[in-house]
Amino acid sequence: MFTVAHLKYKNIWIWLLLLVVLLVIAELPQANGFKVTATLISNHNYPVEEHTVHTYDDYILTMYRIPDSPKLKDNNATSTTKPVVFLQHGILCASDDWIINGPETSLAYMFADMGYDVWLGNARGNTYSRQHKHKRPDSSDFWNFSWHEIGVYDLTAMLDYVLEESNVASVHFVAHSQGTTTFFVLMSSMPWYNEKVRTVHLLAPIAFMRNHSFLLSKVGGIFLGYPSFLSMVLAGVELLPTTSVQKLFCEYVCSPESHFTFLCSGILNFIGGWGTRHLNHTLLPHVCETHPAGASTTQIIHYLQLYTSGDFKQFDYGIDLNLKKYNQKTPPHYEVSNIKSCVNMYYSNNDYMSAVEDVEYLATLLPCAELYRIPYDDWNHYDFLWSINVKEMINDRIIEKIEAYERTHDHPQAI
Image (cartoon, rainbow, N blue to C red):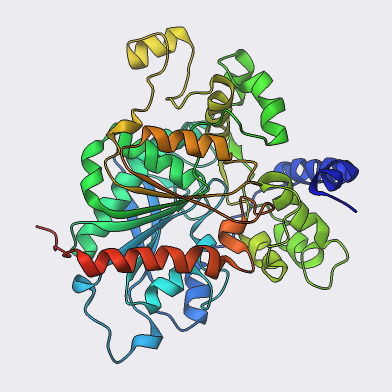
């Protein structure tokens, strides 16, 4: 009888093979990426809008909007009277995360079918947000950011834009993985933004990483988890962009007919948690086509600093630069007690990125937190998005909570 632990160590050769695949892909010529969000939405006969958002520090982001549903043709309210939901992806991901399951089980479509005005965010550096007013993505200056900047610049710009376009005062906020980190950053650093969210739903939340169990983090933390010459050299570099051979890899390795689909599912298991029985394998070609979507190495280094220090704090540049940037020797901690929104956190036992102990510790520091622990021991980091039972375990639960809130609260328009 094989346990998750047996599989983990028995298949160590698969882990090494996956590392080789990732390293090879990273060195291949870059492509413009597969921008499929709008196409996928249109293919399912849902209306879609593309919006361009400019951040305070001049990054140019692309957002997508699903303003209504073909299932509600006869009773769609005008967009100004609809409740609004904003969905934010994780690291190396994009807006595609919320739609590739298809219209029956993807959270974005389910919200649209319930009469919500749905917005999909894209953080700087991913396939859809590789533009800047002055910097080019082939220069190192473009990639000089972490998830701190995504929180205080990207999220603020996108939320303010959504509020103005939809003519509402607040939105329902849903995020996965790094998207949850950027929420914690924003609401801790700029607490007046708490007034701009109605309900908050965080899947696989990441802030404290004391019990983080991802193998590469354990190794990387030794070399990059603190300010050093190596971390300085490796920071500000584009990480795992879409490459010119990705389409071929997806077609021949991740297709249902391939004998090598274990490589595709293995990458997700390697990163998110080994041994899950919930992954919807029919989605692998679509996941492969759109992932990884690109990021900055500084985002990874920042996470490694959290893992090494055990704290949730801003980027550590070293004493000299910290004094210049923060006016103190060490980076400031994020004051999560500033987060006045009541936060719903969904977490699981087999998530290498978001450990049970770290989520539950974070909950003790928040003024208001509600926890839902997935009742499966093998549920991993990506099952929150692409499991065969994500509708019943996650999506229905989120929608039920939001609907209950809408029934008991007014929905003021923007002033």
